Image 1 (cartoon, rainbow, N blue to C red):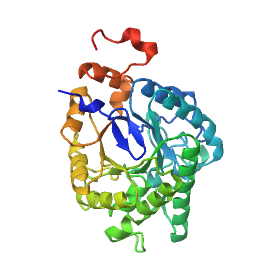
Image 2 (cartoon, helix red, strand yellow):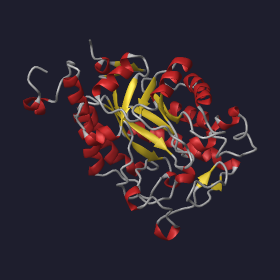
Image 3 (spheres, one colour):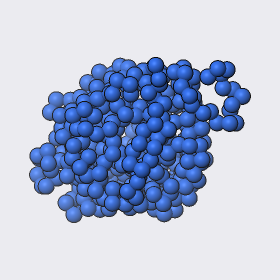
Image 4 (cartoon, rainbow, N blue to C red):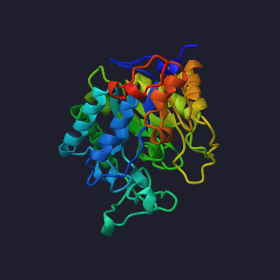
Length: 357
């Protein structure tokens, strides 16, 4: 049986060499949003390892959009040089460099996870957080509700970040509308209690996400793909759910989005998430089937056979790995051996390639 995981995938003008994506994973290793050698080695090693699409972590479109004071940023031109060095190396390995553009909203201004993930005050580099409504995430201070006149500034920040992303050499963009961050906060009725044109009805709650997508798409060359990561359900009563995600995916497709990255949860601390192997794959499958758009599956996918089955059975078009890629940067090389797929190893590593593979 052929390894579907190692079949190429065309997204707009790009052809990915396989169906494996390195999911964006925050490294919390920056000062003032500047990428460092850590990012070059972290992402570069995953490209050497054979992933087709290597996505940089949630990258803040403005300083207040950072999760922590140590997040990666792209809100100024001075961020471009180290990012360009990184993207050039990724491309040299045959991978496509991608970036996830993000704004953390009410979940911003916290310390790094290994420092407790607690709120950071102004004296220690923190800031006033922003959200659709002045509703706090559990354990964090209440955000300030965005004024109507401020919302176009958020859209402009994403637009400028998209332009800089192209200048930095990224060949795919993912807009972050998941995990309880700002765009997700607008989507979900649990966090969005606005009474203006950005709140209330489904059409109003998705308005900002669509405006951001339009602004980002306008900055991208026609051949470069645009992805959107969504939490397809809040796993909480009265929240954002799969049916709304499918309807949003149809709209996103019409607005020039090429794939939906299907994650879940993150909006409320009390969510009841049925965590288990591949637990988010059914969401990716339904969005793919019912919205007619390529999807990315992510979440406790840990083996070559499991990943291959997801593609082979038509449940998703791409498989994104996070923790498994942290454990094994060379997962694609090892998966090719396990699946007996014809996949080229870097010539520098050929002496280590198992005989007969």
